[in-house]
Length: 352
Image (tube, rainbow, N blue to C red):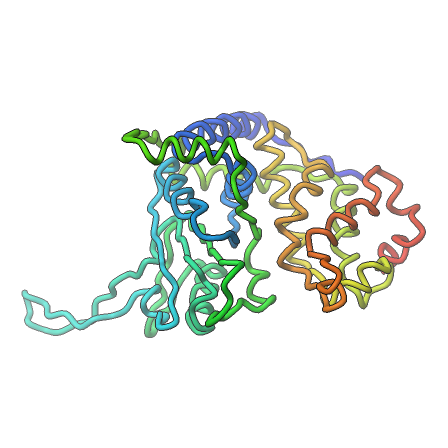
């Protein structure tokens, strides 16, 4: 049975506002950032879904500039943390110091907030720091707070973490375990620009051109839109399609295709389903729709699943990446209503 939930009139007005803000953000960012449209779209979807992102790309692709410019467009505080092997948890969460009260002369503890106390936090090269500091960041992402001593300190709201990784140099790194990567909504690939885009980059960055950025949304407006995203209706068919897609990656479960069993050593968990649906709600609003379609799920399956499924040695030796596995899953999963339950292999998934 299809869900009968619909957006109210005020929500529809908010949807139009979000769509307009999305277009304005693109326009503002294009004054500084050339290309990277899909990256910007995925970052905004994660932002409006209250999710976090891992950005993977080689140095020099303007990842830091893109995020700092986005923060300026949204009137949000931006903080950049350069992760290094000697970085300690207190360096990012903050620490308590002893300070003398000039009035009473007594000494008392005072908390000095760390760089995590910002709206948008860029964790640059997160795999360069030991697991202890990585865990402090991931705890802040999940709980939206840090504990120093015996006192809990609430983080800024909205709170958006972007962690970057260099896919080339892996010596002296501490790769995030799959369980910790699962806390990130998206893994976004930042790729090389096209010839025409790189031509424009070279032209702009070697001149005296200075571009002004106009803020589009405030923090309060973003939090309001984050609530609207959760009220976007999703049909039972779209939820079933999402479940079928994700459950086919779990190689120990019934109904898994043969290629997944041959190429994967581990599949995605329930958080993948939750993030896929929630992110698709935000994408639907960005494209001016008050409901989610299977097309939203298909587009966002890549950034949601690519860091949640693990290919084995056989796949690696054949040059099979996680994106290729996702592509084949999408090709073999029917998206029309009524076809999922009729599919012979997928019947086992729905029976479970």
